[in-house]
Length: 248
Ligand code: PGA
Image (cartoon, rainbow, N blue to C red):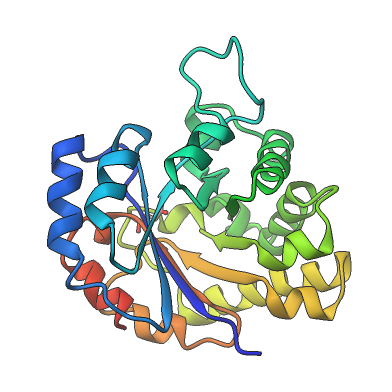
């Protein structure tokens, strides 16, 4: 069975609640495409107003992060049950900015991935190398390690429903997109890694996105690659261009 493409916006720390409503209203006529899953991952405080604004459309509202405990004394954190109650179906886990600025590790990523599945939320699991790692030729080894730890104790059935976002850190927000060959090479290596951990069926089912300076002009070529099932889009997800990416 062909994998359905999934194109997700990552708003990062942008848009106040009222701006979020405006942006959803601007984008909703532009992102109509039933062949693609369309997700807007928004700041926690924007989830409820964005959800309201997106009602009756094909847009799914997702979260950018989540904590791995159920509830309690974790000031400032958002629990999986809070996301579920708000109607959230997707959550970005382990974005490189969270790893860099908020000390997330492969181990916390794994805890969050397990917790998301426990609550029926689909994780968009991020991985990707630094420029130094790419230049030293260790990209695939590094990404395989990230994936193997992120999926520790995750069942094959859960993994089959997951989304992985391959985002080379040097391509995020820099306008420096990976070449289609570079992006496809790593996305294929990730799929092979999933086949090794699980089996061919799981590898064939899991969806793998490319992220890092995806734009209206490069989306079509990237998404045409055999192992690239859509994109995780930062900067361009805040603009009408996102409609062009969704209808690549
Ligand atoms: P970018 O961000 O599209 O602005 O490069 C992608 C991401 O960080 O998910």
